[in-house]
Length: 270
Image (cartoon, rainbow, N blue to C red):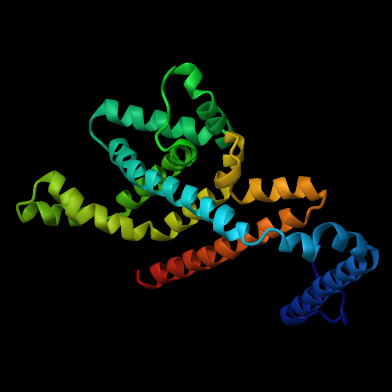
């Protein structure tokens, strides 16, 4: 297709400048529309009441945030240990180990985490006389750990497969047994490789800790979501929910930034 004679053509740089200008104009219009049509007085009344937020202190940090971190760290430790075991099982040359690991991973990645917590609630009905150790803390950590293990196993599997096979061969040539080479050479390298996605997995578990409210926690066992929801219901105001969300961000944003930095550092070291 030929252009009409004498009709000037836009250069790629000028065309890109026009497209960028249109995008900025759309953003400006959307921003002005938001300023004009949002009911800021109503939003402030329902989401930003300083006196309601003040009543959340100091329990917001000494109880809710503390419990959220305990549940998340406990579930992450559970997932880290058993995720590594499952990853090794899935890469095993023994068929039943691979089948068990694959079945577990597919089930707990495919089932909503909420259902896992609900099953834990009804566990004493299926196993009369059985109690999860450490009460509510144990139940929360078990629920987060069961779900996190499936995802962490896949993270570890990718890390183990990323270690060059030459590392194992070099270790075996030095007289190491297969198991010793795996635990002293391959696994330490795999752990370093998976640090960025593992950090992201911890952030995911931190957010999933909000599901602990379905265990019926109360009092000293509440986490951020339950704490904010209870106060919001008491005051008929959404300010506690907003504050709880901001408290999550205080933890998750630095962790997300750390994961990004680790990922960039890993990329530059290749």
